[in-house]
Length: 404
Image (tube, rainbow, N blue to C red; front, side, top):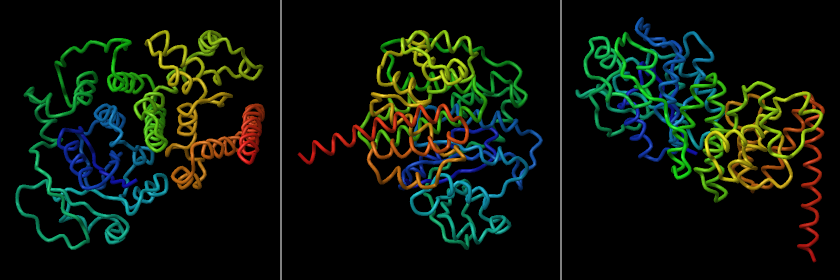
């Protein structure tokens, strides 16, 4: 997958940022990663919104678009982040095809030589120089590709100034960002427009509408690291569904909602999980948090009218797996365990996920999970090991039939 990164303060994200990202996609990139700075080495802006607010505004602005994602690596590092360090982390975790693309506005070109290890950045990335200035730029002495994008006369400073002055600004930013600015009264906003809570999903809603609803719902009720995990799971489920000829929208939806009950109280988890008539192991009674997948499937059906059996099964079995899992359930299980924010994932899976078939990938992830859990929770590992044994027996039967 060809990946490019687009960094900045995004204070706030505006339509020009998304328009630029789409222009980069049009020259052959598959996914753009927005990377909001915790603190820029060149901008010490007293008007900056809190990093969490800026991160939330980006997340709310790219809802349901698997071509765009966000990474909070610079916010997690805190302090001043340097592009060379971010490049190293993104390459390690995302394993892009070819060189990582680095999107720069031509307004940054003259100062690029001041960046930490600028010449190394130029060697290790494909620099994409985008038009931000109406005037002709001076010569940029590093290898690069010039992007012939339209210039949108919008800046974050312009948005902030209009908000502060009480001028029209709402349609300079994506709708999701606008809601957050209004709800949290950012940038000195005094009189936000009241917004109604979104409705419960109806049975005839399209999957894209459903995804948009849940992505915003989950972003508001989870901490940002858990939300990033859910969105990364949704993106990897989308990618794997495309590779293995399943509905990518179903994969994305199952991925974004799989942890919807993660923070629910133990009594509620038990109450919900009991409704699936699967019984409850001693371990699940001792550690009710293991029931959050089963509880989520019931919760989604009862509270939000989600009735797609494959999606509900995928959500229900993503924690420990289970016998009789369908292909979508296997994909969501895989995505949950090896998405890019999981720090303990073996680097082998970066290549394995591109080269193997679904059954082999699922078994490899199961085995890796057993190994990890063996040092963490012996009882869970034993349960997952039983599932592996059954899979191995079924595989042996298939091979025997094939030879006969």
